[in-house]
Image (cartoon, rainbow, N blue to C red; front, top):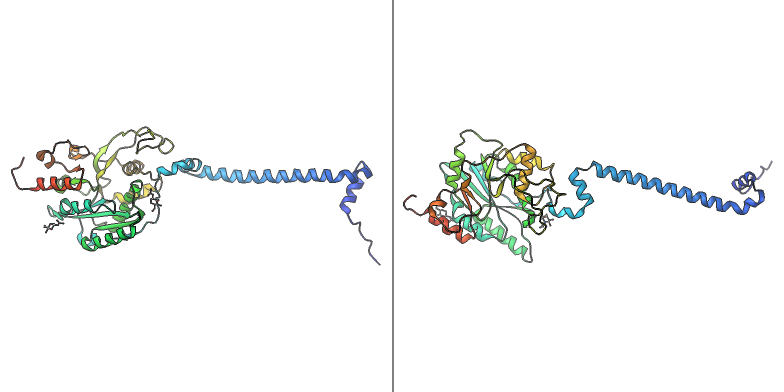
Length: 356
Ligand SMILES: *[C@@H]1O[C@H](CO)[C@@H](O)[C@H](O)[C@H]1NC(C)=O
Ligand SMILES: *[C@@H]1O[C@H](CO)[C@@H](O)[C@H](O)[C@H]1NC(C)=O
């Protein structure tokens, strides 16, 4: 028996029959379904918007407050540096600390091009390897060169390292705005390659350093120091809000009026437990481009207060215009204005003669 053929458009027929206006419904129907379809479409769209909106909002709210602000204001990105990141040392001294077991390792961040500053230090305070029986290690820290002649620069750096064996070079682009990266890879290097040392110092390339006076200061502590960081400590340094100043920091990046205490970047000394601790704290605080302030922010999080040195006048950032042998003799670290000045002051301070 042949099955009864179902009506070709059952749905429509059902509509037809249920439609109160009978045959008139045949022409009205498509309008109603179209409206329904639009309604459905709108509901779907709203649903999608709602779901994505909630996911987006959830993502923003789950971020750290700092990340949130950057997500909402991308221009703030320029006040931070690209760290943490897996930077590698392409010039390294992996065995040096194991061989020397230094009392203090002094790291000098310096621009790749600044051979003159490195040579000035090598021929002056950097050439002292033994002071009061204590082994001193001086290393220079570079990033990648930039510019048209970067390959030629890199060859020179390799050659310089063959000659002196005192360079460390990491693979981030060396620039003023990247100095915080330099400090962070320095801390990584100290943690990984130099646990043998008692102390480390970060000393800028334009500093005249009196290592004898520095060691004397450190030897006042007879026990092994921890959580120790000293230098020219600045307290309650006011945050610069003038956008034309090179140290300008917008309130969205740092909301408070003053920074926590930190030793000025020109020269600071740390106990060797600190590299690891600061690196750990740094995972929770996005690194800003002002290197020494950033160290201060990490210290604050660690509840570590920088130690004021026994005589803070031994650290000088603005020396008097007139050179004075007897004044300079007692300093630990003082800024010079050129490699030539560094050499001439050092020679004068080290020439035999009557004490002051
Ligand atoms: C470092 O001092 C030694 C003598 O102690 C000297 O022979 C050497 O030339 C000095 N190095 C530099 C780079 O001046
Ligand atoms: C800092 O270094 C990073 C990594 O090499 C690089 O991407 C960035 O462009 C550098 N920034 C500046 C201002 O040089």
